[in-house]
Length: 139
Image (tube, rainbow, N blue to C red; front, side, top):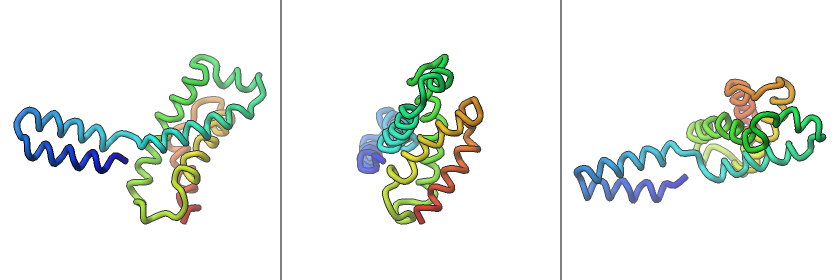
């Protein structure tokens, strides 16, 4: 997360005041709610690895319409908020291991598996259950 940048922007808003401070505070809120770029990268990595393992026919059916970019965009829009919320709930001290390797990357794989099983993009509820299991495994 961009915690250092957010802290600097909050301090600047306090010092500057006025309309510019309001703009900075809006930017801070956006940054605080933005998904972590490492999380997004590893979600995409897992998804891309799972897609690469599919035969051409299965890949074609799954990617019909939006292509691979559409699939990955669907996966990120579903999964990034889930891993962000889970991270906020457990915090850095609440897990052992590497979040990106042990939660985000496998979740990208699981999203593809669920999409194949359901013949549709998986819901946040289904993927949230996977997040919970992955986090629990981290201890």
